[in-house]
Each structure stands twice: as C-alpha cells, then as structure tokens.
Length: 488
Ligand SMILES: [Zn+2]
Image 1: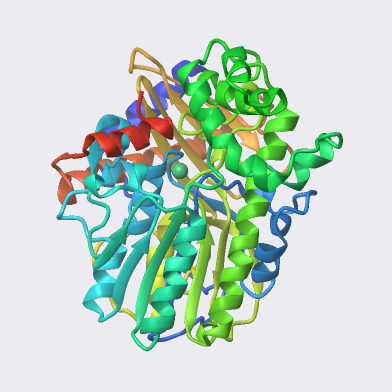
Image 2: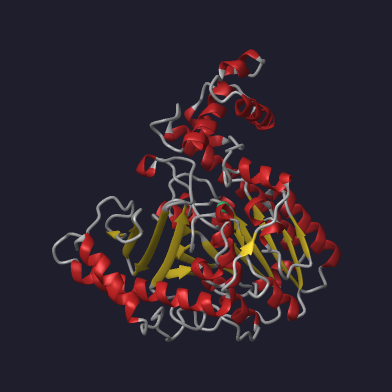
C-alpha cells in the first residue's frame, strides 16, 4: 500500500466519526470459569523483562528456572502485549485498564494520572482489601499520582527489598485480605548483576561475582563523572576489566546504539540475562516463603512486565520507549490462580486485560470504564493495541492473530508510513509485507481496526479524562529519573 493510501485511509476512518471500536468479540471464555472469590492478589511487575528471554517463553538460556516452574502451575499468555513501551505509560494502562491515549500518563511529557481516573487499587480498597505497593519508584513515583488507592506506597527499593517487605508484612498481617503491587528495576539498565552467562563468555574472569556486584556501582558512578575518558577510572584504582564492562553498559545507555558504543551485543545480552537469573532467584525464594506462610492456597499471583528491551535489534541496545516492535511490546503475562489447572493460551492478550480479569476472578463487580477484556469470560482477544509518543515521534500498532501493523506518524504530522509483519513467519519483524502483492487487503482491514481504536480512544479521553495532570517531583525524584534515563 502506498504512503498516500495509508494516509487517505486514516483520514476517511477518522473523519467518519461514527466508527465504533470493534475491539473484541464476545464469546465463550478460553479459560472456562476461573474463580478465586475474595482471594488475595499479588501483582508483580519486573520492569524491562522481555517475554522471549524466559524459558517458559522458549528462550534457550536457563535464565528462569523459578519463573518456569511457576508458569507450569499457572495460566500463561503466550502472546501478551504492553500498551506502551515506557514505564509510566505502560504501568498506567496495567493499573487503569485504559489505553495510553486515554489515561495520557507519560513522564517525559510531565503528564501523570488525574484523580478522576479509577485505578485498580482504589477498587480493591473499596472492596475491603488492604492495598500496598513496594516498588522501584522512578517513573512510577508518587508525583505521577499513580499511587491512588494504595494505603501504603513505598518507592525506591529493588526487588530483593520489595519481596522482603511484602513477606514481612504478610507474615505479620496475613489474616487481612490484601492487594499488593510489587515492582523493581533490577533487570533495567544499568545491568548490575553479572552472573553465569557473563561468566560463560568470559571464562578467564577471576572476578568474584558477589564482589563484582558490590564494586560495579562506584565504577558506574566514576564513568558518569568521566564519560569520555574511562582510563581516569582505571587510574583511580578500579580494575581495568570491570571498567571495560561497566563502560560497555554505560556507553550503551548513553549512546543507545551498537555502532556508536564500544560494546558487544553478546556481553550486554549476557549481562541482561544475568539480571533475569538474579531476579528469578529472588522470585523463587519469595514463592517458597509464600508457601511457608500458607498463602498459595488463597492468593492470586500475576507476573508481568511493562515493556521489553532492545538487545541488538535494529542496531540499538539497552533501550526502550521509542518503538513498538515485539522486543519492546511482547511481555510475559503469567497468572497463578489457586486450584486452577495450568494452561497456555495462544491468543493475544494485553496488559489492559489484567484489571478486568482480576476483578472477575475475585468476584468484584465493577461497572466503571475499562478498555481491557475479562480473559476468563470472553475469548482472549485476537487484537492487541499499543502506541507511543516520543518527542516528535508517534507510532501506533495493532496485532491481529499473527499479523501486525505499525503506523509511524511522520514529522510533518500530515502523513504516516506503514509496516506489516507476519509474526509467525518473521518474529523479528525484519521484512515488511505492506507492499507485497496479495497483502494489501489484509493490511487495510487491520488499519481500519487500528483507526477505529485510535478514534474510540480519542473520544473516551474527552469523556473521562479531558484535563492534563502535571507531574510534581522533587529534585531527588528527578535525579532518579535521570539515572534511569527517563529524563534528559
Ligand atoms: Zn519500565
């Protein structure tokens, strides 16, 4: 399809004004009835975790023995998509059941969540749950107003701290019904947890990994001070090999591209996978503790992520937020429900589905606006929608079955260009089919659905969220965001 006809199609679809979202068809649930009335809920978001780097999702490295074991007892959504590829936008979709265009929350635009929006924790609180969150802060710090509904909202901890705080609270207050949201940046850059995979490709390394973990932070801080002269850090007494590795990570973060940093994708991928391996160990221990506390009998546990990470795709590394390809949008979604038979679900699912699905499983009746679907009562839909706005760049994507359309808004804001991928034949999204003979009809159909969803989002935002919420952050919170590369 030509660029002109993509644009023309969008104009027609948008100006028609009467098109309704045909997001998903109702039908028999793929899961049958899944219930755990009045059960506790623990929602775990491991920031920046790609689905395809977990064993349960087919990865060839053994990064995730504990998560794989958990997945084997759970409902695993093989094709789950995040609705945005930046931390706040994506978590806001997870916690409101609304697409990013509707909740409008994004850190770099300084836009948070209005009080008028209803968040998952608010509903659980109304239903008599105690509501707590132990999270990494940063892009989901309190200044964004995403803490609505949480009685306790503690920010800044890593997953080790946050699992421990949860365990301690449950062991002291376990008789109360709870909704706990746990989050951490441990898999996010900087990749601070070198482990077996880094060791595998550096067999000569005599560095004690425990020691390495403790020492890499000051090296990183040194590199922050002297980014253009790594030898200063060596001169200051840091071991050359560690400076070299740290410098790879630092340069990757700073320059975002394989070609412009002195780094290898192999090393960075090993370090990224080691982060998963480390978190997996924490998760396994946490699950054993919950079992010891008798909580696996009456607690629903969800493991997911807000977005993935680029590891060499399209020449980029250690980066997210600026595209909607699957390395960034395909996330794990694993839901453990006590006494429920495990199942793998192939159909597409979205993070906006989590809120209605949890309400359904726990027996909560909620008639507020949610754009996600209850995965237990309808088909796990075959559509998944995501969008990003990143400075002058805007992209929207819709996946239907295994076909994926991406529309990129060009700089003049008057035109788009389109890409179409067949994910089963080309999971890396390398060969766009949008000009391929015989595919134009399907491309147009999916674009029509995408346009309908974008239009429905625009209308819904006007109805329920017309005002912008200005994020308020102090200097310490802003520094944390700069450290995470969310602010320049
Ligand atoms: Zn994130």
